[in-house]
Image (cartoon, rainbow, N blue to C red; front, side):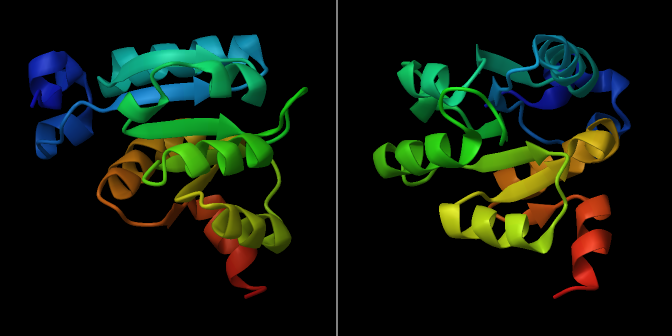
Length: 158
């Protein structure tokens, strides 16, 4: 197993303090600019490996390496096949997938639907560069995780 500090992640405070393994991630988002920035952040700032990218749920489902991903970050609103539908289909094929939804929508109904679908976490796109590493580590460790902004928005309605 390769650990983050062995893979150039020494820039990250998380890597300096904790010895977490380098994760293999798949990114799914139809915003190509966001996808490019997110990939750069994950690989160069967090020290993880992006093993595949897809621009919609249909492209994601056609990937040959879905089962190799340790965490999948997926946008919910995409053309062709959205994130919820893609997640349902992927989980049927790979029941142990660790999916994290990326969204701008912080409504309680969305949280409930994500849990029912099988997502292990959700992160607001507005806070992704602040909370992503801690959410990745939690989900990788088999914990269900929601970003702070979504916790605070939804917590008062539970």
